[in-house]
Length: 609
Image (cartoon, rainbow, N blue to C red):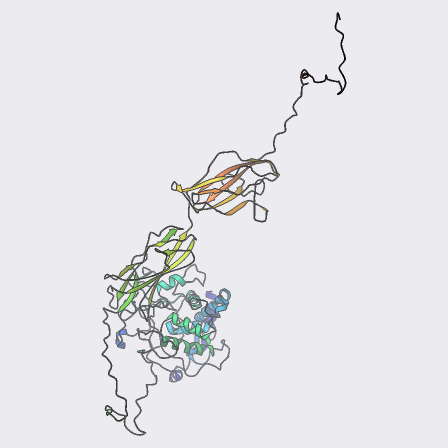
């Protein structure tokens, strides 16, 4: 990769100097140069802007709504619409993108096109976001592997003029173990990077400071929720999910259009930096992206609002009240309004010590979801309404059979959701906690339901199992599964004909089961114990191979038992010898043997007659 980048750096290196003064004259807004250095993202003192930014939250945005550059592209675009994006190294310096940075954007586009073609991610959108977030990694200041040097860090999101985001990574990415900071060329906050981080350069690390890793992560993040970025509405939703500000959306879209009209590659480290930072506080996006936000700081060069028109052409504006009876509507007095103090304003929602959410199917979770609400000053806030929702198909519900419950925080700012009871289906699901209106804060907890387990399984009798070749075994196999000596109900059991006692080798001869179509099968995976932990196996048949075979039963949880099955032909027996039956005397009145019916017996002479 290093050689590839060096070739890119040599390309046109002799023409990197441009007419900066001429370009500056055409730029929509310019200011003294500012470099995005460690501890600063966009520069500027947030308090100097005169806006109340304390306690604002990241609102689920990838960057934590951290500061960004607001400079607009030059008024003169690099080329006409539809031009090639591989223009020579000439023209406006703003149209040039450092070699490694441009290569990372295009690589991300190709990768996403392979894994999520329906998203239709354009690399120019990544370039626009990279320009606004970090000035293309501070003009391409990256090493041979594409890693920013020095690393790019935003300010501590400590609620003092910025969002309040407590540390989520132990300082692993941002070096701050107290609060989070936006990190790298695409300015991910650590908690978002933990979910979306990528290893795009194949070095075995997911590094937010590496432009290849960060560009691919940004691409996948923008494509979330089945977005099609060729559709304007989806593209705007994607950009707003990155940083929830319509000013941010307008700025990104301006650079996106600019790069679509043409750009070119310049050597790393020679790119130009934007100069104007955003103010750290940004209001909720308006329903129609592209319209100004109330209270948003206008950019230099913005057109001021028109002044009130005079009553008559050429006349002066009216300053006094209307007279009664002159046809003018009387002004309706407005009741005085009082804004809530920072101590009363909801600022953030945090995890209040919820541990891992795991449970066995049908059982209650040991942990319960707990959250902490804070006000704009960072202190605990009571009476905040929090809605907890279970999302997933495991059948898990809160106590009482509900998927959604709403509760209020106590005086210490905490609230704990009802007990969760796992469903019967193993798998993963989420529990979300949402609080606040207008700009709701959301926490998401991952949870897992594991299948029921058994730590022992055994036959219920010891009767030998024997069958003749081609016949079926007359006696059924019945087993019982237990867990901690109690009946293990609903436990999955796998039955497999094997060659050895350990069950390492499957057998393709001897006993077998039958599937629904009546075909021989030697493994069954759809068996489950009943409410008493009992399991009666389906009928077992014998093929023509004689011998002793083994059946191995294994439960979810690792318990197993091996049962012997014998196929044996019945022993042949010799015919029994017969002996002449003793002649019984004829019954009285019965004819003698040999005499025919109807024949009178011979008379015998009696001696001496």
